[in-house]
Amino acid sequence: FVAAPFFAPFMMKNLAMTALVVQMISVVSSVGVVAGSNYWGLLCDTFGFRRVLQLLAVGKVLAPACFLIAVPHQNWSTLLLMFLMFVDGFLNAGAVLAPQGVMLKATPQRNRTMYIATVNFLSLALGATVASVLTGKFIDWVDARWHWQVGSYEISGYHWAFVLSTLLRLGAIPLASRL
Image (cartoon, rainbow, N blue to C red; front, side, top):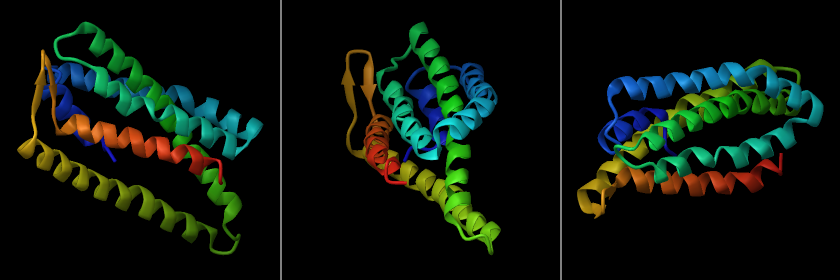
C-alpha cells in the first residue's frame, strides 16, 4: 500500500531529514538488493519458493513498522532507517526472484512468456501505479481531517498509511503459505 515515492517526502517533512540524507538512505536499499540477490537464489534452490515467500512475507512487515517509530531530529532514527532500508532492499531481491520461480512452475510451457509478462505488468506496473495514487490520496485525505501532535512526535496521514501497510503485509503471511 505504501509506495517508495512517498518515503522521501515523509522523511524530509516529518523526520526533518535533508535531501542528502534521504538519498543516502535510498542508496542503502539498492546496496541491499545487490547483496541479497545471490543469497535468495540459493535459498530458493535449497528450500523452495514457498518457504522463501513465507520468510519474505514476515520480513517485509518491518519496513512500514520501522517508519512508525522513527522520530524527528534523532540520529538513531536515521541509523534505524538506513538499517531498515538495507534489510528491505535485501528482502526485495528475494521478493523479485521467488514469485518469478512460482510463475515458472505454475504456468503452462506454451505461451509462458506471455503469462509471466501479463502477471508482471498487472501486479508490478499497474499495481504499483494504483498503490502510489491511492496512497497519496489517502495521505492527503487524512492530513486534511486529522493531525495529532504528541510531544515532538507528529502523527499524520503518512503514519496511518504505514499502519495500513503493516496490516496488509501481515495479511500476506498466510497467503504465502498457500502457494
